[in-house]
Length: 91
Image 1 (cartoon, rainbow, N blue to C red):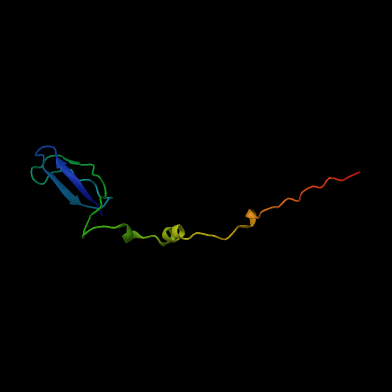
Image 2 (image 1 turned 180 degrees about the vertical axis):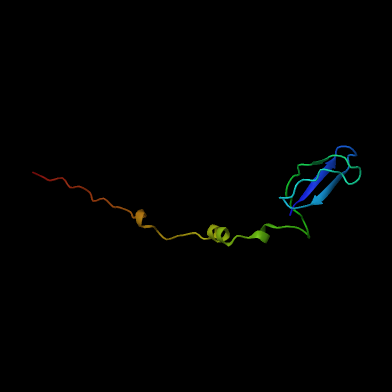
């Protein structure tokens, strides 16, 4: 369930309210009885906890192994073709 921000048009009080997405928006201010407006928020934002984040925290094994492997085997299309010299016939 998301948390919505509201602001009263009369007393300018702003507050957050935790409610379901299907619930009707609040319309009456609890402090003064004025008209409330639901503010447009920035949506979900990351919450950083702990000492830090590193690239290795979200390591993907497929990309790391494919970058380090190199194939040295010749492919079937890379065969060398040698030409035989043509001989002139004497008459």
